[in-house]
Image (cartoon, rainbow, N blue to C red; front, top):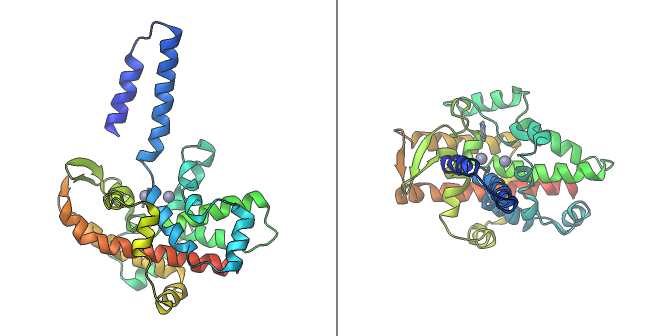
Length: 283
Ligand code: ADE
Ligand code: ZN
Ligand code: ZN
């Protein structure tokens, strides 16, 4: 982010003598705003698309038909990032707290589930419940169906990123600085983007590589209640927090080795959970 701020300052400080040069300046500033959203996204582009692609593979024929009536040729994977694309629009800023649900650390399973279920604030848990209820209403207006379905696909992905069920004091790791192969990031963005990008796979390659489940495994995952999805993500977030022992901690190959498997499990669970939910709504 600091480099972007420096870039803005540089652009603003240049004295442009002519109309043409001032137009170049405008284009450069617009280019920067196009870049900006991609630098600060939630469970980044790839993570959401992987979850969407896996979910798609477990939708029933009837669910696919119903989703086609809403999204047309926009696939589940491609619809999954809309909620982040519109984040920078001020009229949509009310949606920001829909993407996560932070709870204090150190809770046991019962404490966690009680806290989550009695929390009535605007958060990913209350809003997933809201969206599911709305989408089950066949008479919902078409434009709301489109928006709510895109939001649901996205938020189900998000809550499988462990730091979207993180701690409020550090905003799910957003305030924890770490070094990733020598470059400074916050811990949250390591989990949104860096660890996934490091695998150097497209979202379809990634989904193909990890999408191996038995019918029994899918059944077990799809029978879990929503609180359990959050609980599993929270448990992993506790391990992620425990792995950070000092400011600006250096993370590299070892971190990838330690956390790749649990991260892939979360992506896979996200896809299977999302498919189960969409089948429940539309089938
Ligand atoms: N802002 C505050 N907490 C957050 C979290 N857990 N994830 C993303 N953004 C946040
Ligand atoms: Zn998000
Ligand atoms: Zn995020």
